[in-house]
Image (cartoon, rainbow, N blue to C red; front, top):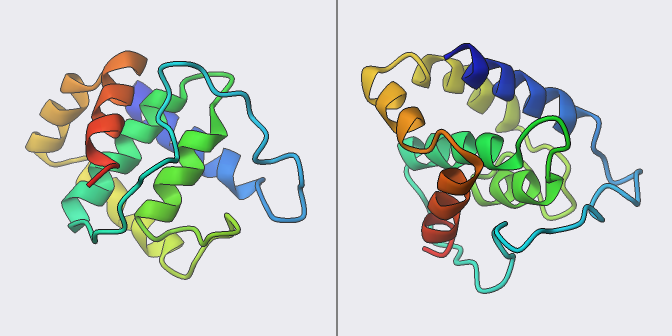
Length: 130
């Protein structure tokens, strides 16, 4: 659980540094097992699924060299970042709610199911296309 919370804080800090004023922020190299931006659906997702996607993105991004493309794609999908990768008004309320979401028993089970980069990336590949 401690690793999970550290990943959440890492992502918050990482994305707080990202802005449209940084032209290199979206040029992170992509590996073969990271989700692609192509054919992503704009179907709305439930609050629970938003937290699941966010959690999977944190794990898939990894430590210490995070793949910010994964985070940016998920942040846009769940509505906490706009198309220019700037945070929306929904960002801080979502992060606050995410702390509460992580304390649910079913959340711990989900985190165990996607506890590796590979499992988290697979989850994102399956669920970002909806």
